[in-house]
Length: 121
Image 1 (cartoon, rainbow, N blue to C red):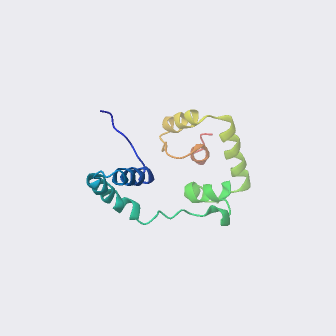
Image 2 (image 1 turned 60 degrees about the horizontal axis):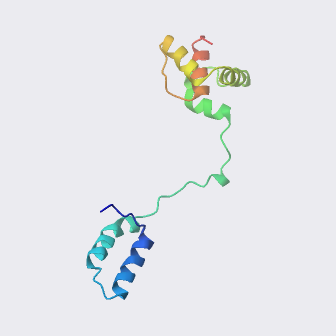
Image 3 (image 1 turned 30 degrees about the vertical axis):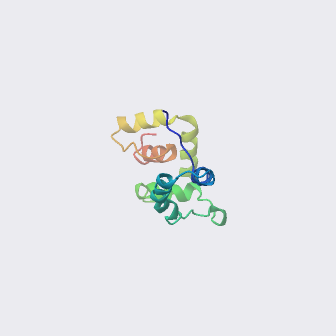
């Protein structure tokens, strides 16, 4: 016999249906109790981004790779990064970073900034 998957509501309905027909749903009630700790666990808090301003490219670069630029993240640098992001694929940027011994972690803009900081782009 195949497995049947029920959500919590469907399981409650099945138990009620069995008991309404005079059946014994004790085993199903035990299964339900075993699931209760999961259901009663505190809900995960979600960040509400509606009230937060979105981080700019300049702010994100400053936070992630700002240490590579002693002069700071300038508008000219941001323009170069955006241009490199648009003209190279992630695969190409990772390949170039690997070729120059740079970390391969980060998104396209971070990789482009690393290459620019090391004067390889």
